[in-house]
Image (cartoon, rainbow, N blue to C red; front, top):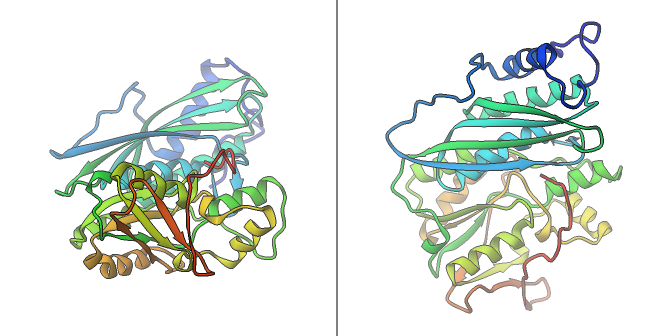
Length: 340
């Protein structure tokens, strides 16, 4: 579909800061309602919620640039919120979407973003049911910011949280790491690597729901976004008051991502992901869990990367290629700002 706001009839760029009235109403009706199929003009959506426990999350997306290899800010906004619900073991149902638009944003850009959100929501089986639109002055919005909130239903009896992790549990990763951060960096800095690195952004809800339906004893789930794998492992080790021992040789990293990280002086363990998560599961269930993960990850390289031990509370250790073992610390500072 092409943008429903033809340039001959509407301005090519967004109305000025503070604008409203007929043009804003047309923007809402022809842009957002057309994309999300929501014709209800009320200030709040009325939801049909099953008689179960609910999960709710919210997040904001400020990625720069808005479009990059393998994704865009709209896809991230939907998948990121869906994935946050999935990490609680919830089946996502509804999303809200609020847009902070910078004066001068091209209508065609906004249309591409809303269509990407529509496609991502359809793939995840969720509905975007309400939202808001605000316009800020030129130079104050980086083009477009998106805030989302999500509601999901918990239909199982598992308690999925860091305090459920036990010594002896397997640490699983659903695929290779570092794709998203490197894809954004390459686009932002106009870097040309030998191979095109595409973001790994994807919805994780189907994977998690299949793990739960199969009876895998899932202790804890966490998506490895900002701070990457190293941040996730340190957060869980600290919260669970246990030690996590991982093996560098078992962590999948695409050769192109590894090369790009070496050029830029980055550690793939600290680079952000948008379609990767860590699962702490009973060791006996690890083979089945990996089989399920590989059914949903295009690269089919899910791996068991370590084990939870009593060890020292809050410590993460990494077995290196030369046979030693070192402490894997939490990333210091923000290596890749504005990646989600």
